[in-house]
Image (cartoon, rainbow, N blue to C red):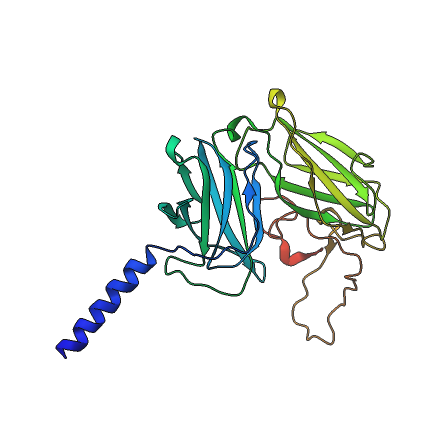
Length: 294
């Protein structure tokens, strides 16, 4: 039993030490020269856990490094080890990893990526990014995470998140461009001070690409965020598609299902609710059980 205990402790110690030194001797992706413009830079999208990528032109600045992958729409943060060109460890941790380089550490570094602190590998691609966080505060970044809140045959409402880094935008420009068109020819288009907009007067059954950018006043504008094509519906929505046109349902008691009054409706070309379903009339009491809309 004593020898087994010693063996277990030796294995545990070895595993612990190994987990603190997730470094690789394999590089299959090209070197990346840092731009250092204050924008989020994509270092690589095809690196495999258990490999490293060499990054050149690192300054004596503060940086944020990320490594992540997606499985069935769920994002996972991966493990990063930063070493110098001779493979001496500078920092390590779960993404995002922040590090400020001393003068003697600037120049060329290696970013080693694994799935976790146990140096787990897998045959999947990870995305690695970097941001010069010393320059970023005065840089106008793109909006993030655009989503749709309403869609019909002639209208698409959409919203987004403000940039998570950099200067705070004072407004946003947007354009809706029929699929195949280019930015600059948007119709409709506009400028808004909030993080939402409504594109109206669209053509039915037509895919549109939305372009959105931040305006940061004295610090200029960001690049344009380009969404995938989003198609309008084929026809107009039913009259009770939104809360204001909800169909009133009169509660009937003492009847079985065969003798109850039917309320006909359709799901064809419905566009989504515009208010919380518990309070369609904005009154003090819930009335969702008495109305039907989509």
